[in-house]
Image (cartoon, one colour):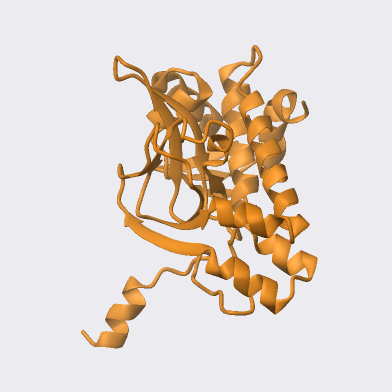
Length: 252
């Protein structure tokens, strides 16, 4: 087998490729919209580049940071997926959220100055590490960065609120799938073709449901023609009807 053939098999077409340079960030950079949309000049962009440290490769189950670690940086997922969780004294896990390429992890550590949860790799993961003291200093001269941080904090609060309320299992899972599809679309993936990095158990934990309930609802959605499931690959076959199920949550 020739070297070119082997490389072709190894390479993975993906919108998370390292396509940045001295004039622009990678296409999935957490601050890419700030720079491309805000007309940031090359000098300021270079300063922001200097704050970034690429860290990898974490394997499934590795921790990016642990509860109680001193806070000095925020992380942006560069490739793969990360979950945040709490583990109580009895060893019981509570999943707080899932983070895709381009999304920030660790913003909830700004006030306590220590990470209040674990960040765990769900697959092979690379992250961008932003020194927070340096980023905060740069934000005083680049208000768009500060605004982006506020926007991300607001989104995290809003996502957490989706778990509140007396919603059915069907509504919760439909909202989860629709929301995940939208987030994939923002990162350049097809909106209706989802590759779930998280397990059924993690999804159930996050939605505060039993794992058996999640499996049962997925089968019901598939029987109704709303989705097609193949292992961890989920295709949203009827996005309109699925959104109608999720409307009570997504329209809050």
